Length: 284
Length: 263
Image (cartoon, rainbow over all chains, first blue to last red; front, side):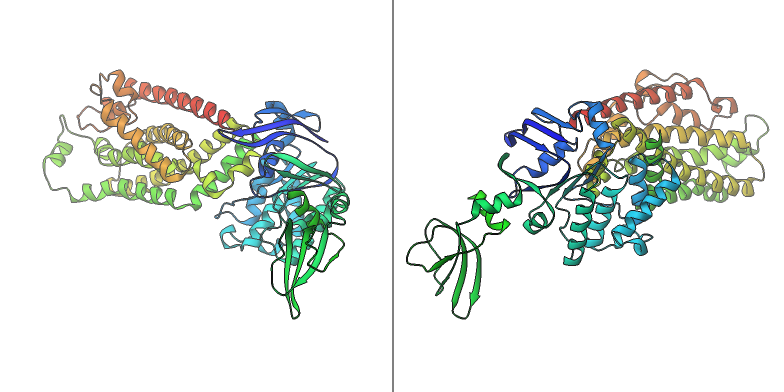
């Protein structure tokens, strides 16, 4: 259980988090928001990497503002940063072994077993002896995911985990996270709404350091019901208090999917909203 | 302890797989062996006459030290610390720092692990040069005082530990490797040129002792005086090493506080 109360975090004159309060329970929790919303800052605070300016954060009952609490949380944490770099001159196996040592897996055989296991999970067993500088972008991302899984963490924080993965790997990884969520708390931050809609039963949308929405994906979709329309024009972009969600060129004209109330001069029909529509509505 | 050993083990590997340490190791080997070339090219001049003289002559041990130590000490005092300065900024450069900070590793474990890893890597480079150089000198001279020879290298290795430690910790305050190297070069130049050399080998001043160039050690070993006793490990050498260790501890404390505050 993660309890966040009135959390603020400022970097000199920029306030990244503004009195945020959240409770995150077991299972998979999705964090959505535009660039600069404060998602990464929030995750770095929860991971004990950043000291909050004010407010409190308790992870599994440990206060992460204390040195003891921070270490206690880190012992149970699997973390995949948004921009994970790797040592180019280590092999995939060596890198994971190194992280395993630092995660406190002291028994050599146990470490080797876990490294082999996570390599298998991310399907890099055959490439494990290669230096990391020879890996493709997707393979590096998979090694990043593998290191986060080492040590069977109770809390898994993953920032944009599917960036750079091909569609097949993305699906595999989503399923993997869903499996992990049965055993631990997973916090998934992403721009890819599809990742959230397929795997999270609880989510928050944040913008400018504040929580805009908190609830189930179905609640977010429900908020958009009756406000999403589809219309076809001859090419004229719909005007008025609308947000265009998608544009599709058709033979008979241009099909727009919009959020809001379209002008009466358009022939618009109400459509069933998606999670993306709900997100766009929240962001308006 | 396990964290320290783990970081040290992989720092050792990373250093040996990087370019900087391999260049320094090769340079150490070549410049210390260059003394052999000088020895072999010496004409029947003053040095060899003094070497062969029965009274007041220079022993082969002194010659060996004279021809090897200057190049060695320049490398351990300046070359290795500049090379080592990238050790901590490299984690930021590669983008692994954020991940390491998310692991249950304390600041002191991280710093000590990095230091021990570099010391092991740099020390192994020095050890390899020590063995190769020693064998080549043995083949050339047929006989010399091995303990004296080893003493010279042990002192150089201790200077390497102190100065690379200072180089790593000072470099660790910088955001990238180039700035780290530039800062370490500046600190060592300022220390060497502005602090002053301070006195002689026999009577060094405090300024000479705190100079990162380790002046009392250089003036003790790089000395062609005929008396061998002068070059056996002497109080100025001991004191210089002790002051160097205190300097290292001071810089470590500063780096530790700086890193704790920046987290």
